Image (cartoon, rainbow, N blue to C red; front, side):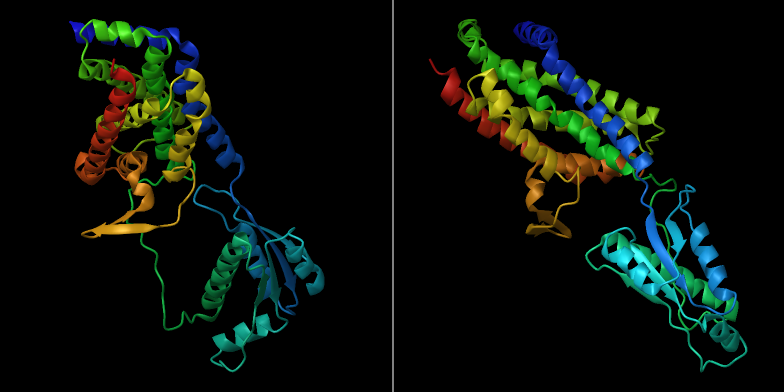
Length: 379
């Protein structure tokens, strides 16, 4: 009965403190909204300037092939424009108005016709001028060179001694660029629990009600269990709202939603453990919204959900490499969500991640609980 009373008290206080609760529940769905329109409008298109010196028709046909290159979704990959002078084309690359300049030689058609007739003496050299510091320049060069080789092989009938095939071993249905960010956004929804969880703990000390709770013979375990249960429920709602928002923008999870819910619950407990550590170090709600923002941004940016991080190796467990950011439970949460929702996995595919989250959760609770009791629970 005492546990249920504590749970009801904590739940009601979270609802009354609606501003933090609303921020927690809407922060990640709002990012889903932004990310969808960002990737919907910002499909990468590489700008290519072509200088065609070819005296035959092969150069014009190759330019037409560059024009029609598109992605599986029908998006334009290369935006091609022709330029008469090579110097002007190269200047466009230098000043950043083009990613790549391609020069087709005047003997392009003659070399292809000669090769098709069995005369391999003549060779045409297509030159690509790019900026090595521009990643888009290198990617545009890869597309342009591939099309040139493929077109030359088709015209001459000579595919050469080497053939390269790309084999997709991923899920039967692959996610687009937006879909690949959804697991990180689900973890972001859980990271927001740090504010509601830490606030539930700190305000008892800040308002002086912790003394009255202690006089009621409440145990630390009962209190933390009640707060943790409340945060797990909020975590499920936040992740559910984020996932529904993504699905409203045509995201389709491939794996088991119950398995994702298990990851959500385990990860919510990990965030609760981190929140306990944060609450143990702070004294007021003002401290939480100022100093407490630092650990939130550490979780947000160093878990690997927002952008790729370099691998800084700590040690290896069998064939698994443990990097520095693996000490954050949310790193494993993102991996687990990705395996389940993007790669059509189940709980059996994320056992390592669940075990790592559980182990880190125990460590956070041990450190946070000991520190909080020592600083705030003693008479």
